Image 1 (cartoon, rainbow, N blue to C red):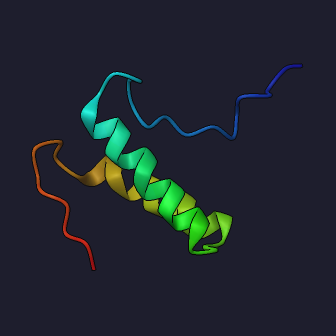
Image 2 (image 1 turned 60 degrees about the vertical axis):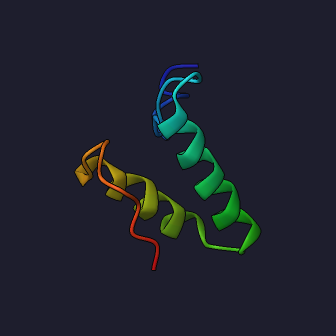
Length: 58
């Protein structure tokens, strides 16, 4: 059982509005049939954002 959480990425607190938005973005990416590495890249890109910065959807 060691290392079973090694591939998890933290989105935020379950009560956080920002985390809920991130979760919705991930669900949309899954529905759009994005590849796992693309979704991981999306999540890791959020670490470089300021929490107060508006989302620039492209």
